[in-house]
Amino acid sequence: MLITFKSKAAPDIIMLNNLAQFLLSIIGKQLDQRGVISHDELAQAIARLEAAIHNAQQKEALARAEHQHDKNEASDEIPVGLAQRAFPLLDMMRTAHQQDADIIWGI
Image (tube, rainbow, N blue to C red; front, side, top):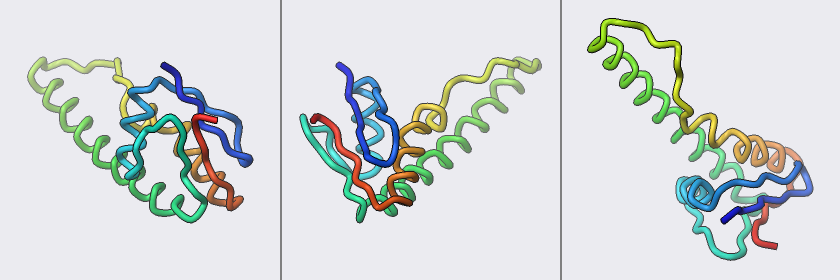
């Protein structure tokens, strides 16, 4: 199932249900049929998502270093992490915050 996030401040974002549910849980929201991240909630939501991305990047870097040490070879392949998956929503949240706009889904 696809979820569409909408805001007057940014183009629509469409993502898979499980990713939307995961990202919303990070910022303290629940994926219901309809929902909103109000402009008043955006500063805290952005901070939570940025902190989660930072933590995930540290863990991913450590895992890559351990993997390369175990294999004794460098790999050019970089897996898709939370930062890449969350970027569209985070970008929308930042833009909506700057313009005092809400983000909605399910409408």
